[in-house]
Length: 363
Ligand code: SF4
Ligand code: SF4
Image (tube, rainbow, N blue to C red; front, side):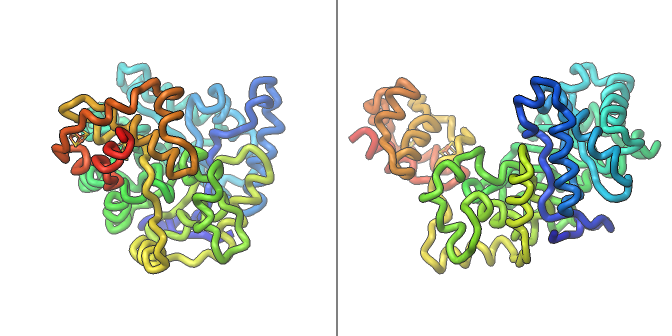
């Protein structure tokens, strides 16, 4: 296993962590939780020492399963993280609600403290400010009492917003979605966090299944290696110097093996070095729409993400118009409404040529 330093702490964490949100659905539903826990134990045996869970994952069983496994192991041989936000404490945000949620998590995980506790799923700077105001003091209090070691946050914001979020120096690390599809979208935030000495943990390294489901499109990631495309996609993320841990959602022991193989003899490079290398080889790392919806301010009310999603199909070797018609129930003619004001392209996190694509769709 390849280990990295978690930000400016003295913690050595495995370059891949286990995302504990993918326990086998059938086993979870039939109560065969011990079988799920075997996967966690196997991951630990293979050198993975970071386990990421949360309330509600896997029919709200993930923390329980993870606790079943981790309680069999020495406490100093792993790091465990969980999450909370105003939603999970019932929106009331009292100290008692926060404490009840935290104590439930600790009891389920069978630990006296969490290594990382996330302010969970922040979607905007407004929400970030509101939730920090409401909850950060409770996090600090729990830290003072030794119930949590590090206060971190998880977010789906884009790069410039993440830059603002980390500027306040409140958090030891952050968890964000990042992969070969959306690298432009979050890159500046990752760089800012790294430069601040924060740990950067990445979820969704396979682009929500889009990468493994389109191996031909993403074969460039595996070129010159003995890795499969999903393994190479994990390695792509893990090899960023700025990224500390890449979470792999593991349902089976084979998934654990894939994750471990992906970081064998890892060579760390800065994001710039990685992208320069691809650029020199003439690979456009991606030109797909990620569906982030930041462009949704069209004066003509064109539903741009849906049209760009349909255009993705063309890039993946399928047809635009089937997707528009049968999936989105939209007429291609609506694309002709575009007045080419350029607003959407300025907002597009992937810097896509939206106007050109709409013209093509309108035919
Ligand atoms: S360029 Fe076209 S699609 Fe983009 S915001 Fe303007 S009118 Fe809408
Ligand atoms: S077109 Fe750009 S901004 Fe709009 S959803 Fe796609 S990637 Fe996001």
